Amino acid sequence: MRPMTNHAINRQSVLASLKRVVVKVGSAVITTGDGLDSTAINRLADQLCGLRDRSVDVILVSSGAVAAGRQRIFERTRQTQNPADMASRQAASAVGQGRLMHDYDEAFARHGVVTAQMLLTRSGLKDRERFLNARTTMERLLEWGVIPIVNENDTVSTRELEFGDNDTLGAMCVGLTGADLFVSLTSADGVFDRNPDSSPDAKPMPTIDNICDLDIESLCDGKTSVGTGGMYSKLRAARRASQLGVPTFIVSGKGDFDILAALESKTRGTLILPRKNAVSSKKFWLAYHDDPAGSIRVDKGAAGALLRKGKSLLPIGIAGVDGCFERGALVFIRTLEGEELGVGISNFSADELCRIKGRHTDELAAILGPIPSDEAIHRDNMLLDAAI
Image (cartoon, rainbow, N blue to C red; front, side, top):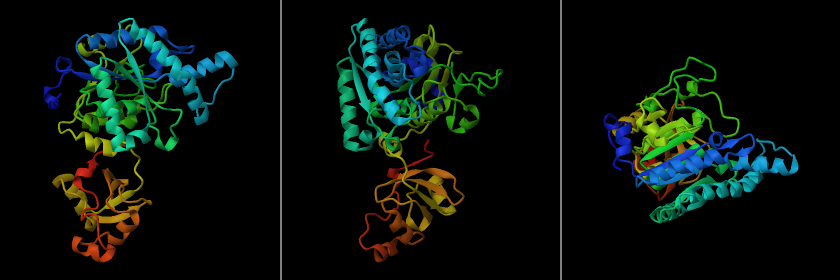
């Protein structure tokens, strides 16, 4: 779908043009204190098959494996697991993934629909060739009418290379699949102007026009007890999706819900509108499939050239370098005061940048010898206002 301007987007226009959707469902929706909730999973399958009946491709990003595994282990051993212990979480996920997929297989089979499990890791998608291979696999599954069910491969992820939560993974799947809507099913019926847990008079926000203007920190100060996300991660994921020109719909998946009816309603959930100027999928991938290894601090002139003139970052505009990184690393771009401007791929190592910072382009070769580029970070390898 070609991104529409914000003024042209409303719930009816989203539905009318919908061709592919990524649906993320949280642990709080499909689990109970007794483990997986088969009623909720069957209800979700009914909803997603209803979307398929409208010729909409569906990709499901599902939490719940860790919660399912913990409950299964407790049933058999009466042992509880430390939720902060990564080894225990990974072991519980290994137990729970099979149970989760079994329940999904049975739920979708009632509609004659085949499902496929895709376990992704951030390190796997960090490599551009493997990222494109994952995209090709996803496309083939959708061509076959299969619903891919995506989760992070918790059993092999390390803390440094994990997505962190399935909200982030869902936003990455939007970029991976070229979806034109991101639906986040959660325990809350949309976004409120204040945290409803601590402010009973908080008011719902049916639409968010510009998520970049939203003070996410003041809205979100809690997490659900069975997941790793919370509203903060959902809004951060929505901000990332907005950069691709994709709207996000956050709505409750609890109880007797209906995705289509909620989208058509003016009161259910929150529709977060995309940015008017979408970034390329490659820039999106560059910015979000790795953690920044350091930072480059730029002077006022360079900051203005980046923000207002669309320029690349030249060494002459660099005032300082933080961290230790090699050529090709993702780094933060910050002002001297520490304000974060964005991220980008550095053409030079941290040591090289320290030697050439503040220097004119025609001086670089004399200092370093043959150089890979005149630019420290090329504009094509930079994303400003990144939601890190």
